[in-house]
Image (cartoon, rainbow, N blue to C red; front, side, top):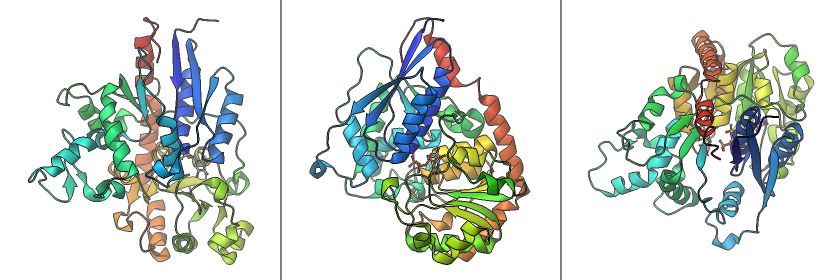
Length: 434
Ligand code: BUP
């Protein structure tokens, strides 16, 4: 066997939104003959989905070396967040310090556009404190980048008081300068201008290169999660919308009911992944308690125009099914990349965090509709009738379909030309470690 010339250790933060792209990156690296991969995972995980994904991954990729970082219990009174995923992140990263003398790369798990905010956030606050530095109160100027509308900012970032998200973005944004490079799961055709700006010589000195390594292909490992393939197999090509708001969004009960009304009313065929609690172990209610008995019966017995399930589904596999023709999504970055990878048009409905910024990219690329007036999906519930209209509008839009197909081709063509190969090529002769 060829000797490993590069040894890469990967260490993700908490939640499926981070773990998924790290596992995809590990799978891509492990496919290189001369690369050795170590995967460090914090133990215990917050969600069952994470522990299942890790064990299936290690079974399917025995060549990847598993390491566990056992977490010490966190002193809850000293934490400034009650979000279980953020608490986990605190427990992971408090004891960590930079490995001396090793090349150190950050794998940023959102869009390049979000990275511009992430890296500039600490400077934006300085700018905001200076009277007159804001030309327009509706947008926030990002140094050397396109301004971002205030309404796209995750709400905690706009609060006066300190909070977990603000503090960690400020701190981590500043320390990005210490990295040797920033890897992003994106590709040039999708975020050309931002990637060019990020790597431009106009940027403040000392910023590491932003390297587009995507789109990382979905990795096939472990059991195929049971998915409604029998039902999907009976539906016409491109006729079904997949509905999911990611692994960390718990919609209000009222909004879930309105969504159910909208799906049925639209007449569009659907597969709906229903979720009512942030952490999966706590999501123990029956489907009928969440969406109502009538709808639960109709959607499980074939009487409605779709099916609803309340369990983890293999989303990427479903998006790749020929029957799928649309995706109602919160626009978590992995979901966006999976929709692009499979050429599925989107109806964007961001719920928190980076998702409005990601939704703006979906809209700009012409691969989806974003109804901005729906807000963050937290206040007054959006009515079913309105949801039905947008769903039907998105599903009949031929232009979106054509754009999504073009973007899919571009994503697949970018594979192999990507920054990851270039990065490895640069490291091999020196035997450097990542
Ligand atoms: Br739910 C669910 N099956 O049933 P995002 C999610 N996923 O495969 P998030 C499934 O989890 P952040 C399910 O395909 C994607 O790869 C999905 O990541 C997969 O959103 C991942 O889309 C979810 O980035 O994370 O989980 O809300 O908060 O980081 O956006």
